[in-house]
Image (tube, rainbow, N blue to C red):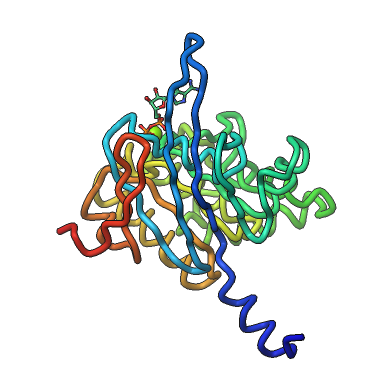
Length: 244
Ligand SMILES: Nc1ncnc2c1ncn2[C@@H]1O[C@H](COP(=O)(O)OP(=O)(O)O)[C@@H](O)[C@H]1O
Ligand SMILES: [Mg+2]
């Protein structure tokens, strides 16, 4: 038996992602199309990992698998101690609400809702027991944290791209996920707005120990991550330190 202190220390270093030998093959026009081959990835709490690679190489597919939105056809994916292979659709949905935040390239905000309600809604879905007032108060805090305290009542159409992406980030973080998955989150932003969004992700990783997996085509951004991986035709290779 481990004593309590050792057990706690070990828990502290348990990876958020432990993906081993992951394959993803789809039947396309009744032929197997291999999208991911033998992908392994471990990510620790508070770690920021960047994935670069050409279009069509499998980056988004990997994020979908890590989010439990698709199931691998080979290998094992453990996120926050849960073996995703073992979970059914409903359990996966619940798992995502509790553990995973997702930021997309295009912001996917609800156009008819204010910034505040876009974020509050995500929290209500994650924590249905919170009342509306509490969800809104937490959403206001989250928006202040991303520098949008004076944009709470704005609808997405009245916000710049960078501001919309920051709302997307606040929404992804509001339920304090252990894992944040970001798919080219700066792809639609100018360099300055992109840098702000990335700075916020690093802040969140450092202050809340959120593990971040960031897909980007921007090598300069990738170089800021703790570790960098390259995806080529479905194969993931660590290239930390080999990029400019
Ligand atoms: N549902 C699907 N059906 C058929 N092909 C798919 C599907 N999802 C992804 N692909 C193919 O898998 C490859 C990898 O796609 P994707 O993961 O989106 O790459 P990336 O994000 O690196 O651009 C592409 O060739 C894409 O066309
Ligand atoms: Mg993609």
